[in-house]
Length: 252
Image (cartoon, rainbow, N blue to C red; front, side, top):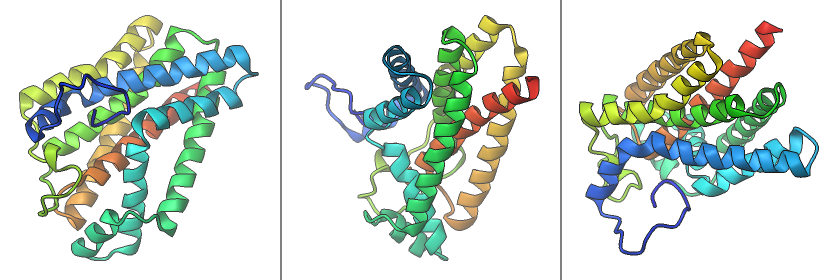
């Protein structure tokens, strides 16, 4: 209900406690979103020539399923940190519903990089389980990385009407372990399926990017916001795609 547009039974409420506890399943949402994206890609390869149109429709599907939830957060972070020089100013800009120059340029470039990396990754080999697992692992790992930021930092806003407040209470070690399980399963399955252990090294750039984000958010905000989590998810998703493409290029 909170992370996608997918319908849920009407008897399920949206209490703050339920949303807070659902954070551990954030990487599992990556399975769903990634699975839908790769399914749309496969269907479009049957209807259209590879790989530009299938990749574009796949991206459209994932954006629609999530309601551009994370893309919106990334654009707000670009605007906030691009135009603000104090914590109060950055938070105020990020809360503004209007899209500024920094957000427009940042989101445009992000989507361009995502398109070309997906095009390179998905067109490099025949569609199969390996391709599907690569796509899904990018979504699950990026959401796991965002969940670890919740664990590492306090919530930055003091007002009660912020859109990420229901998940601002943090997650326990046990809950993070559950999130890690859902986040790592697609990558581990890829390693087992392909017998290429080098894929595990892709966790290194994710750790480095996570460390940089945590340092940056702590320095300027003293914590994170929902927009920050969206930015982390989007950037680390692209980092995973870049890792796959880089490996393909080096192995040629």
